Image 1 (spheres, rainbow, N blue to C red):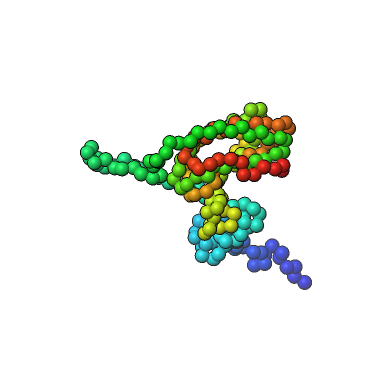
Image 2 (image 1 turned 90 degrees about the vertical axis):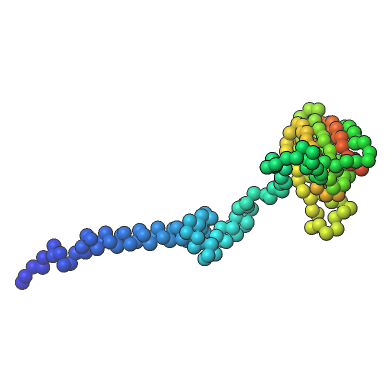
Length: 221
């Protein structure tokens, strides 16, 4: 009986074949990662095939379900006049709205003191016309409040989405100051919530063009 040579090269996979197979498998995994995994899992599409295959939408749906947004909240911005290439000293540009408006009456000036108990909330709004402007400053006497500076069309809501409003600023601060030009007719002002463990008082000063200002809502959270 003849013994079989177990070390015969014909029965052993050649090293070159194994290496070639490993290289092919690696390349296939790399291509799958770039084309399929990155777009679907991470929203990264270096080849552009992820968008064509609809894989980017999978990431967008996942973000929506998890409460995350792929894009930040939209910021509505305008633009200031640039530096002109030429200038005629005798015929300058006329700068109108929203940068300049002439009124037939003087501006108004009011101060208010708003007391808030622990956990109490209040909303103070100024009724303004589109293009009207005001400046404001408010300060808490002892502590910090949650503030949502925003606007809504109020009685002029026809044509707007249900419960439509825009936000100027959201903060937790002891004071704030600034200005605004009303983007539409309606109510423009503040929602404040006392987040301290003691009563507070907010002193508000407003100057500008508006029809009226006052509390429109007050309750406990």
